[in-house]
Each structure stands twice: as structure tokens, then as C-alpha cells.
Length: 478
Image (cartoon, rainbow, N blue to C red; front, top):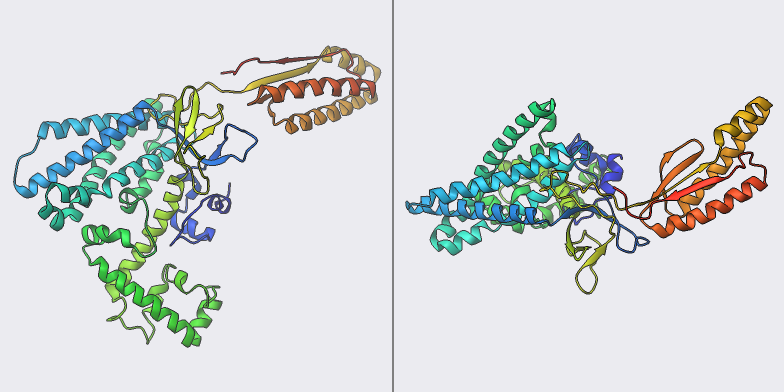
């Protein structure tokens, strides 16, 4: 899959990320090696349009990992508050909480790594787990405020990012140790085993602290204060003023309009807001004579905005994939989903039923994907094919070549028949083939029609006329 097709699969809202494939390559030059590709998830009615996403099983182990993560984050909050109060804290409980979480995390990472075989399971895991982390960390200032209103008001934002820094240091250290051990055991290169997506994510704190960022940046008040140490309200006010000034300049400055139209290939009348999200554009505007840094963004804030733009675009790119995670619950043998990808609505009961052939990822299981394949099989082959071929060979090349051509036409017709019944070719056998399908009915109808095709082919001169064998599995195969 090329980057253009990949980006077209993603759904917004995108307030900062452009749909231009070049932007994706600029953000992640190795885009397709870092980010996993969504795959079809079939509904219970397999004739319906499937979802595109990542099915993840809400297993008992995954729920335990989530609970351990929450316990660890809340324990870190208690430690930070205790330090500011100059009071003691539960050292043993804090240590045990981290050990419980890190044990479960390393189990999931080990399973995802050794079971991946190029299927990017570690990347899917970090998409899912980073979202769990972000949903917990984004509310740290609120929880600190409930613990201690004075400390929460003065230090809540800073505590949030201190917890994140400590969390990432310990997680990266544990991951490095795990990958080193797995590299020795599997004779692989340690750098190749380390999750590429985690390497990209660790440099963008927004991915671990936010689950939505609007165009007005209202969700980043904590980030501005706790991470960048700037007045977020002042920055947002200046950005609003910049948008108004920029709109006026496009209307009155012909040189700026010409630069936008011819160099950036944009429409000055319709793209004024989007132009401000182009890397380097604000730096250019700041060189214009009409630009007033006292009223708009001064040079230090121009640099802040240019750096922030890259993080915002990366956030939207990765978060678009995170929103395609489909948590799967299993109830009475049925696979249910309640959190659906963008653009897909749940039924009135709030749930969607998926095909029994769905194999969700269970990162807490050694194989990650259940090896049982819920498919039915059908195989056919021509009776006495080799013996008939020997007779034709003795009859001369023309007879043999004519037989091969007739057989080729017959098998092409069978392939079109199988395709029409949504059967998948698993293996070509020379004088036959093996097909599989999620529905036994499809293969039953296909096998009946196949017999009719064979009778017609023999009547029309197919020399392999000693019969045809057809067999099928009557139950799902492993």
C-alpha cells in the first residue's frame, strides 16, 4: 500500500493535518513501517460493508493491565502531592503498583513482539495502550485539585508532566531490557525488535496526554502551563488576532496573494485559516513589514507555534489510527462492539455484532491471535489426471497441448465461480484447487455448480473425463 492510499483510509476531524500525502511523508519518512494498516472487520451479516480498523479483545488480562495502569498513575499522583506537602507516602504500595503494572506491560509487549511476524502487533498495542495512558493523564490536574485544592491550583499542570516524564523513563527502560532479552533468545537485532511507533511517540507528549485537540487549542491549557511554561490564554488570543490580520492582508496585499496562489498553490479567498497550519508559513509572515510582533506573535512564540504544529499534525495522524481501534467483547459466543470507528453508528441497542470469523488481537495471550481459523474448506481434483495425461502424451504434442488449453479454460471458469460465491483460493493443485469461505452455504452452492460445470466441460470435449472428486470440511478448521 502506498502512503496516499493509507492516508485516504483515515477519518478526521483534522484541524491541523493536511490531506496532502507529502505531509505524511514529512512527518514520518518511514510511515508504512511505523504505522499499522487497518484491516477489514466483517459484521455478522457478511454481505454488509465491513469496518476498517483494529479489533482488540477486551480480555480479562487487558482489563487487568488497564486497572494496573490506573493504580500506578494514581499512586504517582499521591507521591507528587506528598512531596509538595513534605509528608510521607506508601513507598511499598507505590513500588508494588509499578511492579504489577510493568509485569503485565512486559507480558503484552513480549507476546506482541514474538507473535508479530511482520504484522505490526507492537504498533497496534501502542496505539491502544497510549490511548489508555492519555485518557488517564489528561485528567491528572483535576484529580490533584480534588486531593488538595491549593496544590492542584498551583502545581497540578506541572505534576501531570512530571508523572509523564517519570512514566516514559521507566517504560522505555523496561522495554529496552525486554527487547535485549528477546534479541538474545531469538538471535534478532535489538534495534529491529524495539517498537518503531513507541520511538516516534516518546518525543510527542501530546500523544500520551490528550485524546482530542480542537482548532482553538482549548484542550492544551495544561500543556502550555505545565510543559512549555507559557501563558496559553495569551498565545490563543494572539493566534486569533493573527487569523484576523492574515485575512485582512490577503484582501489588501497583492504580493502576498500572488505568493499564496503561485508558490503554495492555495486559494487566498478560501484557505486563509488553513495556510496558518503550514509549517514555515508563519515564519514567512513574520518577515513582512505589516507584521506587528507586539500585537501578534513575537519571535519566541513564532518558534513555539512552528514546533507545536509538527506535534499537532503527528498527534492527528496517530490519533486517527487510535480511533480505528474496535474493542471486542465476547458474550455467549457472540462478538460485540460498542466503541466504533468514525462514521459508523451502533445499532439502537448500542452494540454491533461481528462475524464469528473475527479474530481480535489479545495481547495478553501468547499467540495474540487465536490460531483457530473459523473457515470452511472445499477441495476438488480430477480423477486419473496423470494416467489420462500419459495417454495424451503418447498420442502426440497437439493432443497434449489441446488438453492443457481445455483444462486451463475449465479452471479459469471454476475460479470465476468461486469468486462469485466469495470463496478464497488457498492453494492451486495442478489438477484441482483448495478453496475456503466463512460460510459453509457458499461452498455447498459452489460445489453443486462445480459438478454441473464439469459435466458441461466433458460434454464439450474435456479429455479428463474419468470423474472428479469434491470434498469439504463440515466444521471450522484450525
